[in-house]
Picture: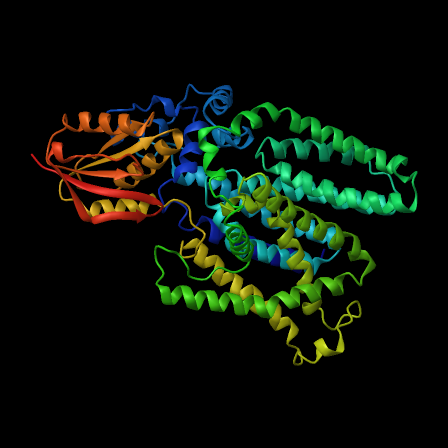
Length: 567
């Protein structure tokens, strides 16, 4: 590889590093990040007292470093309190040992930096994958550039979660998949070494995120289609040695999945996963399609569209510009892939990855509509097809960068639409808009958002005139995680009286309201009581508490009410 390509790849890595590490510790941890921190430290959410007012320091105790905790404690806690496999949490446990505490608590920068670093590693990973799959340095460079500036990639990289790790694992598995497809089409036996590596990679994938199974299923569907095509031509082909090696991969990967099957089945009915079944996609069938398109578009472009920052006018302008962008570029991407398929060296990879992408989308919608498990509710779940989209976009733009190459024959009507030397400008413009979008994602100005405890904290500080007390209804550790985010935000502010927190165990609405009312009578007045995500009907007039009509609504995905409780 010419040395210029190393320097260019280093440029993309530098840009991607800046977009992932700048402002990395700006926001407090959101719900899922709190879970990552607590479990990775070997601590338990069950240590937080319920049904009583506690100080912020007590609520944040699970974020204190625990020198006595080991890897076994992390795995045990995940088995008893969480719904996730342990690989990423174990890595985070080891990673956090490298960093000292900050003000007595784990460093949020340290926790997020592991995910950000893995996100940066995805840049050279997609470069080498695309170079291998498409046998094109230019395709690898464009894919690396798109990965570096992808708003969706930046969004996932700046969270202390396992998504960037599983993306790297998917890229590795896809490389094995492309290699296997090429070998089968040429009737060559894939090596036992590749079989072993592929099985290990797949087992690590399912040990990182259970939705990695969707990636395996998408590959299986694409390979099954290839099996069917070859079987139609020769009924004995599936007994050939080059197919038998693939059966070993399937058997090994299936074994790696079955290990986790009891846990997956148990988690299906657990309280922390209830929200994914609550969308009623069968009746509101257009909503999943709309969400899917939003997540898909955000891989490349994200204009100002945050519900917390943008006005209606900005929403409209951003939406129109996004539609114009895709109206101009979607035909180009389609044409670019069509031109790439003219090259016999590209056909296998383009076909294999396109089938994987289509199979993944079919799985998402099949599960959403038939099982009632809406996989479009959260943008983060789209990691399954994210690296494939990046690679295909990189490949599709190569013909425009190399328009004068004899490898590509543009249709005459298409050539007429491009002024002289304009094709490279198409790629430059595409990447420039992507860079702007990456900056918008870094600044949290787009619609890719998680729970925002910082915004709720700002509202609490602005509206409170007395000591702050915050109460929520408790069903599982997710509610504790939300309160931890708010407590973290309040802790960073000076000159405020120590806030109180209350987690009302939600056995039923009446009991949680009664417990809160009883405990409220024991704290010193005056106090501003904030009810956050507290669905129970509650009458606080007996406690001399008056609802503030100006502080009632939804903010940062927190449903809140303010009561001013007097002496």
